[in-house]
Image 1 (cartoon, rainbow, N blue to C red):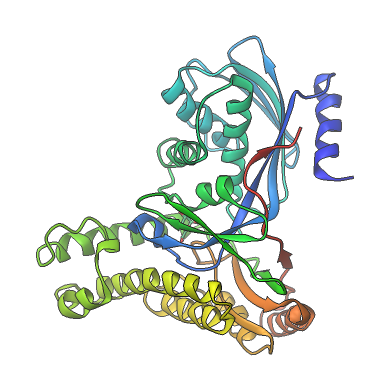
Image 2: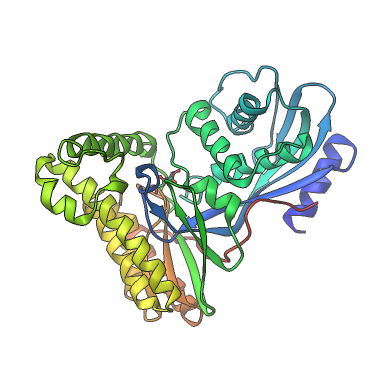
Length: 384
Ligand code: GLA
């Protein structure tokens, strides 16, 4: 049974009638441009065929009743006002209700069932998928007039201000704007979106280290502060810069020595990553997969040595992928510290890649990394 019919059955079993709407919002894997979104730079994510699903119906009172199938848990909360954060999974629907309520006034009530097959904590944006799925559901049930980009911004606000994670805009934008067969070039300053076709015969493969790091959130926030500090110092020499987006590789060569060594490394990663994303998009369009793969490899090295967000497990999988004929490139994807690598590989070489990653990782870390072949899929939509 697919996710959709299973969800409808479970909704019926719990609430005694069919849902009036079923929504799907995908997770994402990022091909290039890591830790650039909060520096107002460029990213190149792909919405994947793993998603959060919500089945829902309106309720007459201003309350939400949400069943999380995968957790075997249920939460009920009022919508006027939405209570403060509680530190559990229901903070995502609560946070979205809060952010939409701030913008549109209190939402109408709903009963809902949630399920997701985006692996949690793997760097594939399971939380953005849940946020966007709920936001899309409320948009539909309450008839809100809100476009995809504004919806993504409201979900980001829910995560920043309600859940308390200072994420950038990439994950929510990928979840709303994804398109089958395409990567999404996103300018995180203007929020312009361009679709970049993934050539036929090319597979996007994800391999999971299975490592989940508690430290990731605090290290993530530290990197953001370091970037802000680098901008503050560089603005003495480059008046008018607002973010590392405004600093070119030449600017950094000229003025970077004014930064403390750690900030030099952080800035170097971000400034060169932005340039790399744009070069790789041109290479993608020209069908030059060697060049895209080379950019992915350089990106991994920069994340490892300059941004310092890799780990022995991520390095092991990326390096193993680089050895496989037919694999153009591979790198850690998402915030780092743990989670997944992404590889760009010829469809014909997917089995070789999978076997090699399993063999190398098993020999070194004693367990098998789950390997997923991702299909680039559409962004959030109403399925029923
Ligand atoms: C997480 C955040 C994103 C982005 C990436 C790193 O996924 O949610 O906004 O900053 O890390 O590129």
